[in-house]
Length: 142
Picture 1 (cartoon, helix red, strand yellow):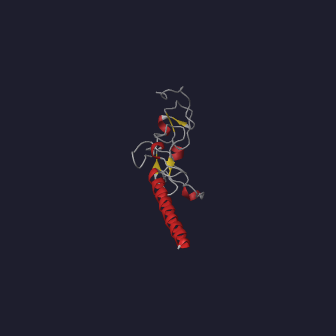
Picture 2 (cartoon, one colour; picture 1 turned 30 degrees about the horizontal axis):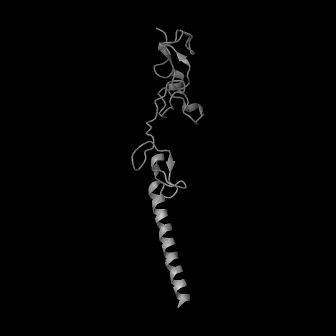
Picture 3 (cartoon, one colour; picture 1 turned 45 degrees about the vertical axis):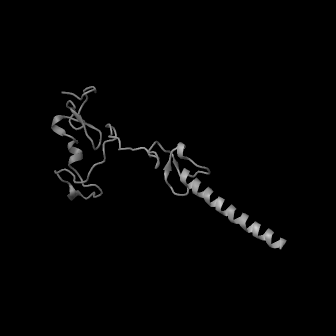
């Protein structure tokens, strides 16, 4: 019984026919020298401690990293959505930090609502300046 999709090769420990690949080191192992990991990776010196009295026959308790040569499960990814229409959005408002789509873009890297509120502020400022100008002009005429 050989590896699925690979040529039958030898166990790295004894040289018999390999039936699997170790998740920890990536070496091939036979039925007698491993199940998921090879016996050399499942038993041995505890990581980070190289004293001779730390040799064990039980599996290491540290969680191993996923094997880099095996297919990895993709992380769940949800693209950013516009806060108004929930469409695909790639822009972030520099004022309110909301994500928005091109349909709801305003001026100067602002979203539509922040652009509206900034224009409202400019109109109010313009109105106040107009009223002050009228008062000054009428004050000089009197």
